[in-house]
Length: 183
Image: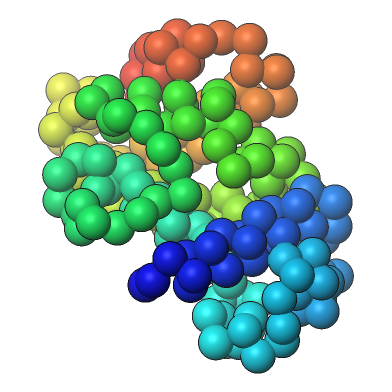
C-alpha cells in the first residue's frame, strides 16, 4: 500500500471511529463516513466493500499489531498503533488501551461496545491460543480445552470492561495482575 492509500485508509478509520463514538453502528451511513473523511464515494469503495468490511478491517488493524509485535508478522506493515512492544502480550494490550490509541476507549464505552467486543473476542482467541502455556498450571484436567479458552477470553473481556467502567484507575501492570489472578 503506498503512502497516499495509507493516508486515505487512516482518514476513513479516524472518521469511522469518531462516528462510532457518537452513533450506533447500524445508523452510520457510508455517506457520513466519506463526508467526515473528506473522500469520494468511489475512494471509499476502492478500500472497503461495505461499512461491515470497514469494521472488520479496522478491528483487524487493532489486533494484528499485537501479533506482529510478537515477531510473527509482517514487520513492514504500518500499524495504526505506535509503540516499542517488548511487554507481555496482555500487558502490551492494556497499555495501548490506557493510552487510548485511536480513540479505542470510545469504541469500548459507546453504544457499539458489544459489536466491537465481538470482534475483540474473535481476535483474542488467537492470542490466547498462542499463550495457553501462561495458563497451563491453572487448568483442571476435567475442563475441556475449548471451555478453558472461552473462560480466559471472557475473563479478559470482563476485566477490560470493569477497568474501563471504573475510569482506568489501576495501572496496566496492576490490571494485568488482576487478570492473571482471577484466571
